[in-house]
Each structure stands twice: as structure tokens, then as C-alpha cells.
Length: 247
Length: 252
Image 1 (cartoon, rainbow over the protein chains, first blue to last red):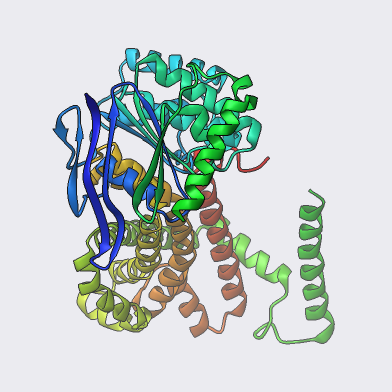
Image 2 (image 1 turned 30 degrees about the vertical axis):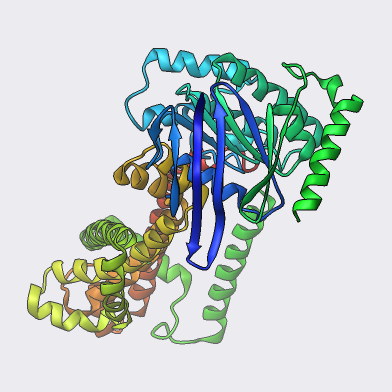
């Protein structure tokens, strides 16, 4: 049974310019799916449609059987850049999704502290975003997206700007955090190895359409050594070929 | 620190040079008075007390004019920034109203509002209005698109987005507008007083002109300069305090 269902979603900025072309995709509850594609293939737009930030020109999005017509509290979103409010402390940034609805309670603050501990930033609660490194800022952004324990988490190339080692650390953290509450994830990236490492399933997108899909049969949770196994590399190669073919 | 000492030293050199020039060239005190004479007049004015009521009047005009001009400018900036339709409708008129030299309206204001402090306050407010409008408009419109999407994603109301994103993130630009307004408010108040006021430092300058009292004029310039610097520094301190969180981590 699919938890997040994308039914023939189409999005066009103008009638002649279809960015997302009748995409059909389903993610089961607690699954981690990655969407790979070149820049400009429409993957970010598809993600925004799935989030309810953009209204599909045709087709629809269902989360847990409910049609998505506007951004919902059930969905967490992580942007390409951390998008933190520079004038707020780390802990207030994490509490933003709550403080926009009500005054954060002591329980909410505890939850924020707990999340900060999980992402290894327990000592940074009172700091400001500019005092943090890029990787730390990304961690805060993920913690903020998870504070309401959303059923679905959508991520738009969140680690693209980070160095390779930090990126791998964050991938491990993300994997742990999402497994914690069985979050259903759709992760957009242009990094094939990242997609294989994180995902249960990988979709290749090109010119607004999903051209290929792969099932990643690596054991979970993924571990660092797997990145260097022949099977992992074969999977990367397969996805790479599919991308070349799609182009 | 060394720069500051040099800066103070430069002032000293200039003042001493001026004094020497006045003493040696035999130039009439009606044209350029010696600094010692100016300071003497200034000291007299402050101790005898005839300067204080005028300083007070000008200060009141500046404070009220600034407060009115800045708050109306800020409010209009937000209205124009938030309403696409109203901005397109009204902005040409706002612009036109700013191109009219506001000081030229002074005589009209004297007819409308009498010869008290009100016309000067209105002129000062008009002058302060535009930088605040312009900077508020710019500040709340140039928001990172991803931050807007973040607020949409989190289901923020338009009022929350305005207060917690647009104004908060545009605050540095808005406060830069306040700083410009503070400088301009002195022009507004002093020149406003030239036109029809009987009290205030501007009116005093006109009075001194009537008596050919150049020394007094220079003394008043000094008062206005010091007053302006106090206002400007106070604005800077307030700005730093308001932006203390914006500044965090941007430098030492």
C-alpha cells in the first residue's frame, strides 16, 4: 500500500513548457526513495508539487489517502540551502515550525534539545547559524524539518554544497533519523552514489519524466564499507548507464 | 585608536590654523570670526542660557518630525510592499511627491499651520518619510525565495510571514533608512525654521543674520553639528542593539 502516491502529476509553467510530465510514483510507508537526474530535469519541481508548494497542472498527490492541495504539517521539507533564519538561535530555528502555530512548550523545547543531541549539536542550541559550519547548518535544517515528526520528509539536494566527508556523515545521520520514526522519504539528488547509499528505490528522471527505476537490495542500515563493495559500484554503474541512455 | 588620535589632532591643527589666520590676516570678524570668539559666544550662550530654549525647540521638532516621518514611512512601505495592486497604483504619486522640493512647501505650511513649531515638524516628517518608505519597501521585498517557501511550507499566515520573515530579515535595510532620515531631519528642522519660525536654532541663525552677528552664527553651527552627532551616534547604538542577532558570527 503506497503512503505517498504521485498520480500522473504534470506541471507546466506555461502551456508549452512542461517541466513535470505525467509522473507516476508510489512510496510505501517508511520507505526511502531517491530521485536522480541532471540539473533542469524537473526533479525539484516534482518535489515541490509533492510538497503542495506548487499545484500540479494535471494529476494529483495523495499522502496516506488524503489529497494534497496545500503544504501540510505532515510533510517536512529540506531545501537546497539550509535556509535558516540568521537572526534566530539554532534552537529557535528548530522550533520555528512549532512557534508559527503556538508558543513552544517546555516539552517542545525538550524535543528540540533531543533532536540537537541526535545530530551532534547539543552544545550549539544558543548559537546563531552564521557561527556554524555548512554541515552543521544542514543538520539544523534537517532537525527543523523533523521537529513535528512528519510522516513524510522531502529533501531537495540538501547536501550538494558540502564536502564529500561531511556529506557521508550527514547521509548516515539522515538514515538514522528517518529510521527512528519510520519516516517516508523522497530525496532528490544528482549524486548517484548518494542515491544508492540511502535509497530502497531509485528513480531516474529526464525531461520531466521518470525513465527508469531500480530497487537497491543492500542491507539496511547502510554502512560505510558498503560504498566500496563491488555490488554497490555495479548499482552505481547501472544507474549511470540509465542516465546516459535517458539523455 | 591611533586613527582616532590622528583624527582629533587634525581637528586641533585646523582650529589653530584658523585662529592664526584670523589673527594675522586682519580679516574682519564679520566675515570669519576667530574660533576663540566663537567659543566665547557659545559658552556665553550656554551659561547665560539664551541658547537652551532654542536647542530645546529644535530638538522637539526633530524628535517629533523623525518619529512621525519614520513611522508613517515604515507603515506606507509595508502597505506598498505587501499590496501589489496598491503599489502599482500609488508608487508614481509617492515618487512625484518626493521630487517636489519639500522645503519649497514651507511658506505654504506656515499659512496652513501657523508660525509655531508645527510647520517645521511637518516639513521634517515629510523629509524623513521617503528614506523609510523606500528602504522598508526594498527590505521586505528582497527576501530569499527559499525562505518564503519555507514559511509557506510551514503554513505561516501572511502576518507571521511579514513580521517574522520580511521585517526581521529586512531590518538592516530599514534601519539604514532610519540613519539617512536622522541626517535629513536636521536639514528639515533647521531650514524649516528659516521660513517662519520665531524659535529654534534655524530661527536664531536668521536673527543673527539680521544683526550681522557672524560669530553667533558659527556658534550655532557648532551646536547643530554636536547635536547631529549625538543623534547619529544614538541611532548607531540603537541600530547595533536591534541588529545584535543579525550580526552574530559575521565577524570579530
